[in-house]
Length: 97
Length: 491
Image (cartoon, rainbow over all chains, first blue to last red; front, side, top):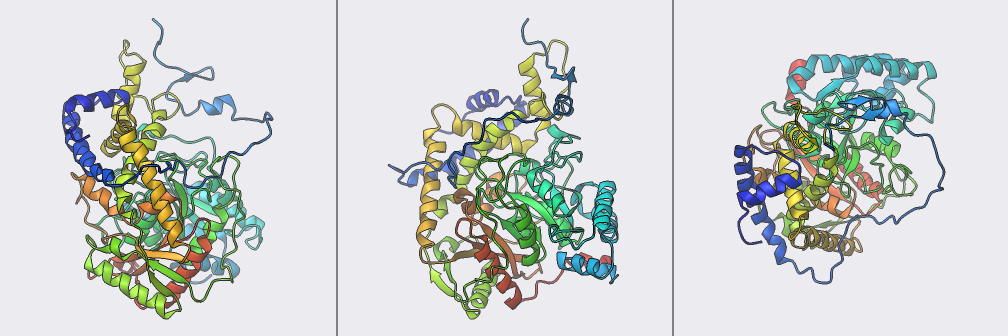
């Protein structure tokens, strides 16, 4: 954690995030994210031992509903906003060679 | 009909309709103002003139005095990250260029059912990530009080629209201060309701455990009126709370509320004018019957780093859905490009810098080896911040602090230093991390005439107490807030 973020690490994170960064961007992000991570170091000052994590601020708890089928969005409307759709399906580049 | 230029608030709209004016007339007045003034401001990303006039005509045909339509004929502007059926909804991102959703967000559905007229969509920072409205694919929005300054953000278009009287009220969304900070910068009232109070169904998710939709307006009464329409349980949002929507004004407001002031949080980094206005506001509250109590919120000092771990982590997951498949645009591809290249290039060209920065930050914080040190720790500190508030709310009815450490700053000031911008969320982020309701109400102006906001934070699901307090403050505050100087030049 105390080691400065490296450019190699930034490239690894970009692959995980599906972002194709150019060189200048990768350099800039290495610097900026490094600064931000350094700023985050102050979180280590807080004693969090035994403290439970908050995932949602207001715990409504799970609620059950009846398991009934109901009308959903018509298929042609559901794909209407897609960049490439045909026959009510989303079209993507070939996945299997 | 009364003088058209005098119609600014919901109360003015109601008076005009009661006096024989039509909803179409009212809508036309606001559309004409947008036409005249918005080129210089950039508040709107889309003006829905045709559908707005149709909606207004429907109100006229039905009559504006139906009690089931509390917002009959009231024009409203909607932040561009809230789904509006058939109208562009892009969250100001290139990746959603021209996207028109096939459904209305629950809040929009409720506004329509209440008779409101949707004027159009307003500019924001891309996916609500920012506090200046400079990170938008549509370009910047200017502050009506000073065109060389930011309106705040991310709901900057909504704030600028209301401040310039282009809409009586608007919806924004608030993940770390994105309603309250632009409300403060533009001299408005802005409410972030309790997490779970207002449905998030149809809000383009940024950070799902922090996001809330809320209103911005010129008066507390206007904000409360819109809040009551959009609040309430919605089965379509699993985090929406099954609680009755309270009446407002409550009629039960305590005459002697206790208000907590976390003075140690206010030690440094605050403009003198902001602090002076805050002290004057406290005097006003005290002389109207409030008791002021010194309180400690020891973990609130960690709100900004905690927030900037949690929010980007959730964003990196939420924004995974923008991949060039189901909505928006896909980057041009060569014949040999595979699925991964399609994802990577679409996201690279579709997102701009601030969004990429936060996706990268969030992906890092969630990645193997770092999860415990960043994300888990931040979620634990979140618990500690909530406990601090729980403790003080056993003795006070509300917490008061400035909304922002500064007034509206010049455009471009923080272009190359994102961290400097992030620390500006110091007073607002806690309410999102804890889920507590919070509002900003104008408290005065700085030496340049720019507005300053007083923030009130309440107990969970007790928006009524802070609205009551804000309304009393609004009627008793010593300093007039004034109007953006540009309004009187163009009038």
